[in-house]
Image (cartoon, rainbow, N blue to C red; front, top):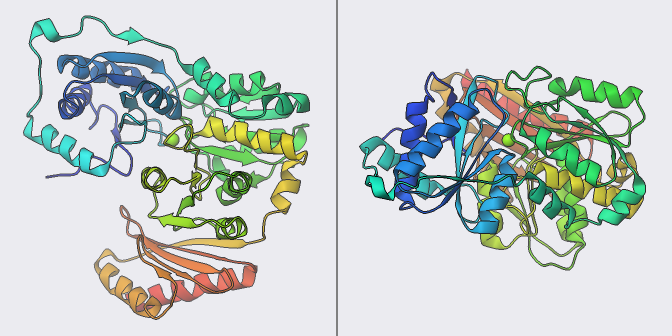
Length: 451
Ligand code: MG
């Protein structure tokens, strides 16, 4: 049976593959799987999200589900609502993808993304068209409409030292990617007493300001604004508000590895027990933080859904990814950009230090990220060579690619892409030269194995 779902939900080009008809069938498949139980539905601010959202609602109603409509909201806000109300969820969003894309993410009652085993069942129902359709008296006549954006903001505020943050009157720029965060994060920051300058903060599915993925190339405007203005820091989100990128008071892009380390360091010092959960691609700084607080780092494959799942299973204190994704397990079982922003302000306010100062206190690591295209026919041969070279290392992790950790904290990860003919090589070490050398060594091995 063909696979519908990617790493988190379904993503396709709107009206080419992801048509309203397909959205109805997907919603019907999900509704059949959950036996017509209640569902919370939301959407991001894309041009075609309204169209697909209405189709999703129609499919759910056709299966007899009662529906709570959140309209435009951030993915973590919907996940928060699922958890509050113990209800399944469906979010129409393509996250950070280009404007023509859209997608649907289904959520468990805990608010975590749907487990892979359950997705397989939804796929089976989709392809066999064994839909649950109720007879007309059982079709709910109406949906319930709720705007939870300000409840979600209040819930975030209750989890940080709001008084300490307000006392600092931070000057903050927030870049909302013309997406769903426009309706949430600027108001959150205002409520925390910040002087807020918002950028790309009108919901617009044409994405006139920038591409919705918060990469350094896409964040030039906020960097310039902060560099030439007088600000304490900046935040940038993606289209559905689960990701957060931080910009320093000097206008420097903070790599995700460092922003998550800052938060992990703060949380690890609290009395709650439990590991830090992160992917194989994330910095060794987390290992140092864990060691100094008598904790473990549990390593997962790459993907926020798997981090959330392991975090839940292992009772972790914090889940994170190298791209800046942060999961606060006592709040939302998924990445949460607005919560992350509030928490970073909390750290700044309670430690009474600037972002640059706080980043300077993290253990210094240098990271190299490379990728190389390969001949798909030689993929197995290349991976066999990597397998052979890394087999004898005492500390090797093979849950997602090949990762070798060395005694001094340096590591290298060789990870083939699941979708493209390329292999990524990541290396990290305390010295730049060592990280460069590690990456070069494995890039050379890949090149030689291809000959
Ligand atoms: Mg996203």
